[in-house]
Length: 135
Length: 178
Image 1 (cartoon, rainbow over the protein chains, first blue to last red):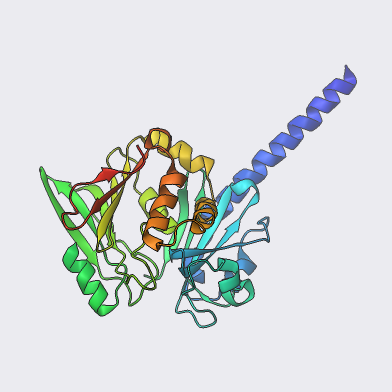
Image 2 (cartoon, each protein chain N blue to C red):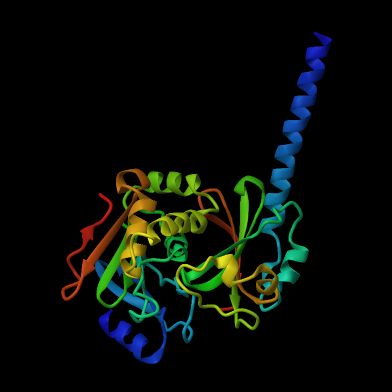
């Protein structure tokens, strides 16, 4: 009985910690001063984002499948994700052949040097919890 | 919409936009945004006056047929649509010259469930379907159109209707994902 109680206490503590961490991250992302990172390199934004994001970023297309590089930074299980458009590209060519993979056309090392044009932070059913843009 | 498309083709502005609102029973467009030269992103001004109800947002893909294929909606367009897709009937309209496309909210709950099932991965999952179909379909417009049909699935499940109207009329829309 005593052993069972101990297990329950541990499980409760773990669940509470997870919920608390989730709530804390939610709060950090909602209050993150994203406007401060507009027109600055993506690398600068990444350096200051709340910790815990997956380091395998998603490179994608914005305008359509063949143009407009974007970068998406995900937190585990897609509980939150940060979607970034660039502006005034200096290191990459924003157009690509239709079937060229985005990560090949727009290498991450170069994309990270580009300036941020817009940042949108999502959760759940694509609920926007924080956003800013230069447009 | 035709004149905006033609102007965009002539002057290199791919993604112009406006919104459609209703007030006192009258429906009208407003907040035209020219976008940026050769822009890769749609910028939409959703500012409403008192009493106005947002019905739709419109934008162009003023693209040639050689390099850009007058493509249908992009994954980013679905994100833009999602921003205000909270009421049944809310619509995204797209002009591509020889056709018009529309996303329409047909069931808000199903649309939310669809979004949650894809959360954070719309672009990635859309692209997976696109890549699979690209070996079978060479025309970019048809390819993007068919990708949406498969990605959204039936509107009775996703809650999002996908429609197309073709030239010269471009007003008689056919549902592509019944």
